[in-house]
Length: 435
Length: 97
Image (cartoon, rainbow over all chains, first blue to last red; front, top):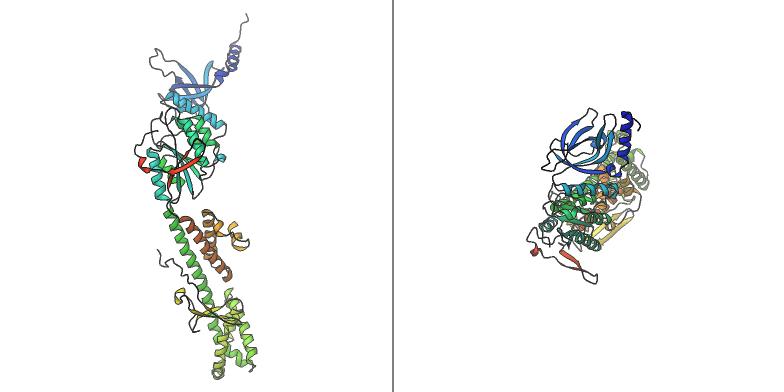
């Protein structure tokens, strides 16, 4: 027999240990003994057998490296019961057999927690929880299917919330057993039936209960059935603190049945208020646009009145048609310029305004100019606008309330007038003063 | 950007073909354009008309009668049956059947 060096012996032990596939993938239930964390972030702990009545506690060393520890959602402490997963190996430098942890879950209920951890790990590895698998929920669902017990508090909560928030959404209840023997198969069948009803989304809900009561929602077949559905599924199982496997697979997970219902439908009253606010904004924006343009027209017309007589006198009494054409053209340019905000050009024109010596002449021409001014809006009409008067031709139609069915209207266009009768009146119903 | 393109060039989809969210998004785009105040009159009028139609579409989608609650079941022949769900049977919270 050959005499080995310690290093050789340890290499042998290590090779032997690492050959065993069972030791490469072990779940162990244990109580945390000591637990320390190194500066590098690795956790070193002892895991003790937690069965009662053992004469002497047996333990094993365990290490969780920093990378694996990043996913911990709790901090292991002395005395805590855990389900640990990892591989056994041999730390040759010190001759220690150690459990190299990649997962650690706190637990009080060993078997269920173990099954839960294993199933979650398995489905996660298959990619069933992947974010890209999640189907977005419709914003305003027309039809919702609810898979649950027909006599539980859950369905009552869901109906109440949907009725209150969004009564226009139709609810299709698909009754199912939700606990006990046969409940996973019943839920799978109900989900399939719900899918046939072509809903916009499916709610899978159940009220609170003990961990055992919720087991159907931790079953692999239910989880896979939820994953297979192409329609979005919202789960709401148990109380806030409960997490079940279907919650991971669902497109959206809610803490309770009521919350699931709230996530499924929008609050109709709130939406209506939003639309009312936009309707008001729309009206105001349109009013502001029109007010701005009519202000520009008025300002321009005012300036033109002061300008026109001088232009006429100075030009030496040419015939009215020519002036009218020039005036109209000038008016058009002014309107365009004013609309583009070229105030400077206007000021220049105004500076060339009537000189005092022409005042008398101005009066002489006042009558003719008056006619021209009356005509000048035609330049604007020529560009596609029209002015609508009441039948008397004096009052401009500005408000739907000025007319009623049968009222006669006179519409002035660039090249003529049109009369018409009112067939229908649609006043804007939204109250301008809020509401 | 996409919204501006809609406002200017591309032929507009009929509001009746829009889902609520799409109609609301376009309405917001119309409002932003209109409230900007630098829109030429012709376009402002067109935008206003479009906005009114979109508001009407959204309101229509939010209107509607209160819907019933039905219970869905399948017969032995595999036929789907819907019948009114009786809220009266909602009594005990924990009955799993």
